[in-house]
Structure formats: C-alpha cells, structure tokens
View 1 (spheres, rainbow, N blue to C red):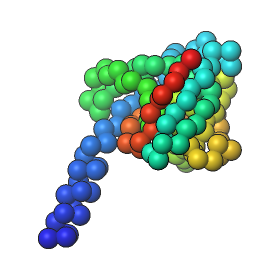
View 2: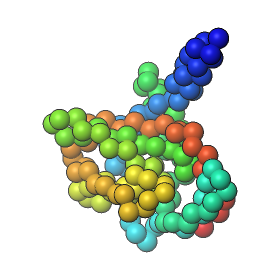
View 3: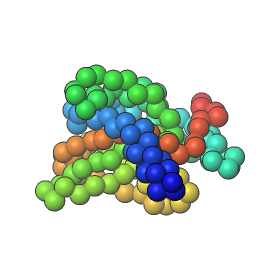
View 4: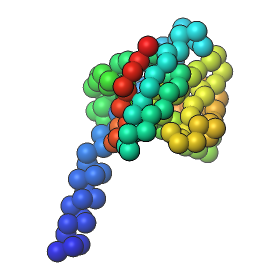
Length: 145
C-alpha cells in the first residue's frame, strides 16, 4: 500500500510540472531593451512566510511554446525556473526567471533563493535550448514597484 501511494505521488508530481520552451531568438527579443535602469523592486513571500526583497527583470508575461510548438503565454512568478542548455558539451544551468539579466554577450542569473551570492553566467551565443517550468516552490510576489 505504501509503495502504491509513493508511486502515485511521484507520478502526479512529475506529470504536474509542465515544461515550456523559449526559442533563443524569442528570449533575446523579450530581454531586448532591459538594462539596469528597467529593473523593478519586488518583495517575495517564501514558504515559511519569510520575506525577500530584490531587483527583478520587469517581464510579466513570458512568450514561450509547449512541447508541440504551440504558442503559450506564461505569467512570471518567483517560482519559475529556467534551465539553459549550452556549449558543445550541452552543459545545463538553472536560474530563477525573474532574476535573469541579459547583456549583448551573456545571460546572468541567480541560482538560489536562499543564498543570493550563488550566481552564474552563460555566453548568450552558446545557448542551444531554454526550458521553463514552475518549480512549485511556495514563493509569491507580495509587492512589485
């Protein structure tokens, strides 16, 4: 009985995390014109009611596609995780979408909600695939300016 329940929990958990894709050209277009002067102050409530404040990119609706290539608009929220596949060895790196910043040559991002100093960067021209999904972590915006 316990194995059956565990199996159902795993299947439901995997099935409920829909992955969408952002074509690289679309990603570049969506971040075009966003520089440090366009960032917004946000306050986020975490799973145990803790509060975080930080600067986030101002994108509210993300243009992406589903697994069949159909257009989809995903509403930005602090639990969205973006997985980049890049380089000739198909390395992977995950950033929170609202903490992604792009310049002419690189994508910069924050990898952890709890340890902000865990950051990374990826050469923009080496990205081969961008996946985005709701990590279902209990983070929500409580104030955006």
